[in-house]
Length: 72
Image (cartoon, rainbow, N blue to C red):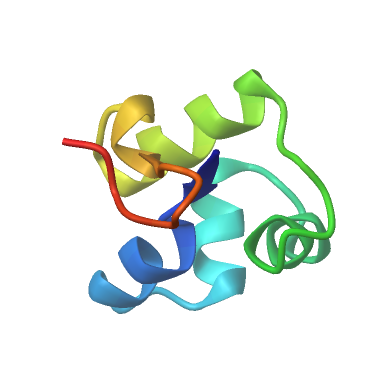
């Protein structure tokens, strides 16, 4: 299983949903849906969000085991 660290990383940088959406060139509504796991982002959208946050796309994703623990 995996999940995104999007909200955590956005807040760590002091960005609002609108501010990150503008930097990443995605709609604020779509970004909110991604953060609340209502939709799954495309790889293109993940790349845009990672670029706007100044990180690698892989740094957005946390892989977990079935028990919910992070994999090393």
